[in-house]
Image 1 (cartoon, rainbow, N blue to C red):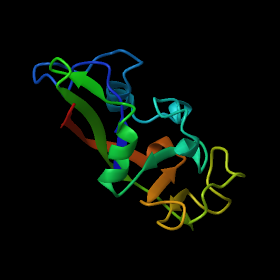
Image 2 (spheres, rainbow, N blue to C red; image 1 turned 45 degrees about the horizontal axis):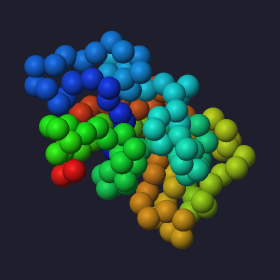
Image 3 (cartoon, helix red, strand yellow; image 1 turned 90 degrees about the horizontal axis):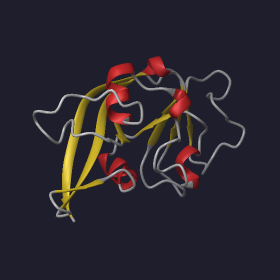
Image 4 (tube, rainbow, N blue to C red; image 1 turned 60 degrees about the horizontal axis):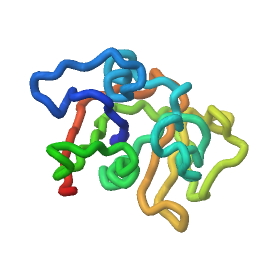
Amino acid sequence: RYHVTSSRCAFGVDIAAAPCADPACALCSILAHGFRLDRAGAGPNSGNRATLRYGRGIYVSATSGKSNDYARETERLARGGRERWRCVLVCSVAAGRAYKTTEPELPDIESRAPPGYDSVVGEVGPHLNYDELVVYSEAAIIPEFVVIYTLPA
């Protein structure tokens, strides 16, 4: 599953750069300490109403294009503004018992799945073009790969 994140340092862009210790660098913080629920929805997309449509959890998608859409707000300009760098994590996720929905949001959910469930799956339908999976436990998701890619400016 794909999870977009931001980076404030050169790690992943400069082959010689090591991960940084800046707590504001989401990429390096996730790699060093894992995902943190208290940071859910706090990134550059926090103004987007759909960011936490299923509550305060960790959002991933099986569709890389969905993460790319959210990555617009996290990209950095590089090489004199000629390239846009984006960062996506490829993660292993333990969904447990998943509550499936095509609803645009679940207003009664704050920071947990509905009773009897471990996660929420937003399925493709009238309100979602791509799937999304939300887990509410930091132990349910592990970053496995970092993908840094460029787009023309």
